[in-house]
Amino acid sequence: MRRAETMVHQVLYRALVSTKWLAESVRAGKLGPGLRVLDASWYSPGTREARKEYLERHVPGASFFDMEECRDAASPYEMMLPSEADFAHYVGRLGISNQTHVVVYDGDHLGSFYAPRVWWMFRVFGHRTVSVLNGGFRNWLKEGHPVTSEPSRPEPANFEATLDRSLLKTYEQVLENLESKRFQLVDARSQGRYLGTEPEPDAVGLDPGHIRGSVNMPFVDFLTEDGFEKSPEELRALFEAKKVNLAQPLIATCRKGVTACHIALAAYLCGKPDVAIYDGSWFEWFHRAPPETRVSQWQRGRA
Image (tube, rainbow, N blue to C red):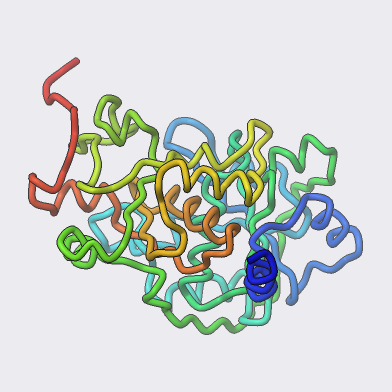
């Protein structure tokens, strides 16, 4: 069994790179067409300003990946994927080609929040050589690695995007799955939001709760207190504790398809690269799904 697992890991591209590895790559002048770094920070309005913080300090050579720009702006739902053409145009402007190794990080205090979403976006558009910076900018700073305020100006590159529909699920597919039960459905939000005992943050007209039949695995459980990803052994134990079978098909969901990507990353680190993301997640489900498919303890009108 161990040999089979090792073979799987050899086939999968490394999903994590260390701060030490990236610092050595920066120092050796390896950033360029073959290696690009992206700051994918995003914060709730009124808290921190991601672009401003990027302009003040970032990993030398890193470009800012703007989640607000690289999404389907015409959708009524939150953070939906852009089209193949729009994604290709956006990342091409950041100097990324189909041959580039992309490393993504963010500045969240947890160590990682939005970076796995960008990791998944590259993968869903057919790009396999993408990694998350383990520990994030938080640990990059803590370990004393260099930062700069100098904006990067990469030479534009040609990127061709091909949507891998196996890694993406739509509202209709999740609705059908309530009957067929072909996929396990896992929700990455906090227990309170999943149960409906805590409000959805920064949300107007969106009650908390979850999709009927989904299992709750809060994404913060995949991270250590220091902001690093837990070991594959620890991650596997978390899935087992929730009776989630990594040998079977799996869909991840959350509020808007962001922290769901932490589930995909954790499963990938356990040797399962095929977790699909329900892009519309709870935001779309709440607004579209039949009431009997929504489970919540929330009581409207309460203070």
